[in-house]
Image 1 (cartoon, protein in one colour):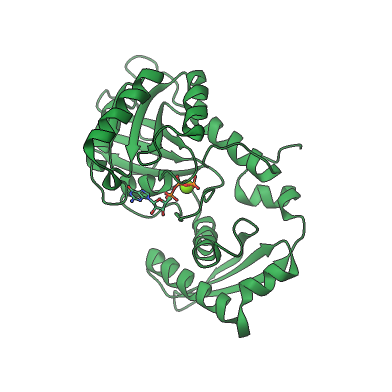
Image 2 (tube, rainbow, N blue to C red; image 1 turned 45 degrees about the horizontal axis):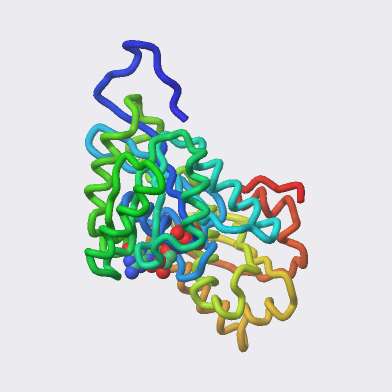
Length: 309
Ligand SMILES: Nc1nc2c(ncn2[C@@H]2O[C@H](COP(=O)(O)OP(=O)(O)OP(=O)(O)O)[C@@H](O)[C@H]2O)c(=O)[nH]1
Ligand SMILES: [Mg+2]
């Protein structure tokens, strides 16, 4: 994304570039972005297909600003929303300066990883292989996996990390800082994300819904922040709408006597307040919108292109 600057225009001292993290759903891309940034900028869940749009996390390492692009997992798409997510993930890879391919070390090169390894041949940028979740298996198996992935495709470097425990994350961050191209910082030094806070706040509520209702309601919901106002006492009042597809799902989100939505709201409120550092009043509404998965407005709110079919 960074054009080559004219000679002498840029102090050689600084570097800056976009690093896309791609991989199958659930390999730990978002966990790694948060670990590299050192703060929560993108949501994580046990379920596949948590991330829907490109989220940028920003971190400075020595003289380099690394702009990490968290992408949706790459899988064989079925629905319109799937197609939008997968094409967004690949556009993230094509637009970046460097591409990190994450593999879940425990899964190894399964059918999903195999398809991504085949498709990554079309990505022109320098690639880095990251084997994640190394806390879950013995070292010999890791070395064998690193070898077979490198036989399949050319990688500039291979890292073995645990995004969860932080093992190897510092080494990866330092290497990325060396590998991004020379250039001026693109964001203020204290900025950690390019997403507006109202977007992260909606994502946090969606994460709590995923965590609480992942069995009953896997993908049929989306969350939007409708209003955000600061009150005189510095507290913030936030209203959000949770869209579901059917009345039965609305009942699930509400729970008996409203118990479920109350607990989702309490968890989200606490986390948003921790990030903002001020008290938060969070109001959640649940609406049935049968075809939200086919509604261009919902895609715009999620930051996705609306695929024509
Ligand atoms: N044991 C272990 N679990 C991890 C590690 N990194 C991530 N996880 C877990 O893997 C699950 C998926 O993590 P995410 O970061 O949401 O994965 P993702 O690749 O962003 O998933 P999508 O957004 O759905 O594509 C979560 O339960 C994480 O806690 C790791 O290094 N070790
Ligand atoms: Mg994710």
